[in-house]
Amino acid sequence: MADSSTAELLILDDPEAPEAVMQARTYFRSCEDVDTIDKLGKKPLLDLLDLNGRGIYPTLQPSWTDTGMTFSDIVEYLTNWGAFESNALIIMSVVVDEMQSDNHIILFSQTDLILPSRDMYLGERNSTELNLLENLYGQVLEALGANATTAGLDAEDVVDFEIQLAKLSFITRKIGYPDLILNDTALNAKSDMYEVDLQNFFGTVNEINKKDYLWMLKNLRKPVDRTKWFMSASTVNAYYDPSSNEIVFPAGILNPPFYSKTFSDAHIYGSIGVVIAHELTHGFDTTGSTYDEKGNLRQWWQEDDLKNFQSRTQCMVNGRLTIGENIADCGGVKGAFRAYRSVITERGQEENKYPTLPYTQNQIFFIGFAQLWCSRYLPKFRAVLLQTDPHSPDVFRVLGPFQNSEEFGKVFNCPVGTLMNPQKKCEVW
Image (tube, rainbow, N blue to C red):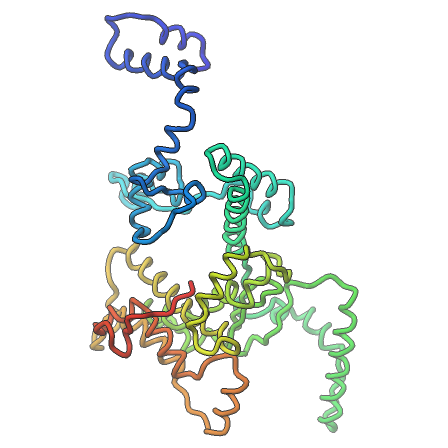
């Protein structure tokens, strides 16, 4: 419309013009009718935000409640509104199928954050960009009629939520082993620190401990080396480090029963897949949620969000010792199963990896997870673990997540209200 020639054509009043041209002229005139636009003011937008009289934006309706409202209701509303075209929640588009270029397919992809760069979310919380974004949110809400205080708090919540999304994408990973292991020069330089006496094992161990202690002290004035591993490559374990915001999977855990290239996808997702999802969930459990995306300890959640989170964790067993691991176990099973089903849906057909077994692949997923925790302990040692281990006893690491899983009950046809499919489930994430 900036083209003056085009504008002149649209201003012309030619009754013989094609209907399409007449329609374009009407559209242009409505755009130019500033008086009518000003007269209507914000009413068209407020009407758009009104979900059949219920309201879609809580900040604008003090008495708003989500009772009876489902995620499907909101998606349907946004679709009718045209919000998917503006990528409000997710990007949905019809594109050429790269596998069969004569056809179209529906493509779902993640929407963008408001700021152009993820790094803008991962700096200081009071950075210029985030403050401007928060102020913009608040000004828009106030312009729509929201209370100034409420608008400010809501804007702060929106920005903090986008920061949480950025934190998840900022998590780094270490898999297998540190580069040092395959670097002979660096490995030899490291071993030169130590002296090994074939005739004095005790003395050698003591000397190694002393050298390690001195090495640790030398790091005091040095910047943190984020490439350093704190677990040996042979260890059968994995961890999430909140101070580094990283997940680590040593080579030791990339073996049966956690992983094998002979496993079906369901088996892999039910074993090492759950472990991965478990560690990712730690980034948002009772401990991980207190660290920001850079690994700094600070309370970056809003007070209401924190209270809601703490309230949702109350149904977990032992609210102090095992709460973090229980959250990660339940979140891991849930997240890994969803990831597995996404892969199968994208593939377009179910697996048939273990045809002789009387189980579906969905059932194999849960069986694979359960097999990870087959164990036996001496009674005295079990008693010690109950007092000291941040993990629940192995049997409950299986029963708990399964009882809280909607998918488990469906996959194994457990009637609602039975032991493995209780009506009331505990869900944090």
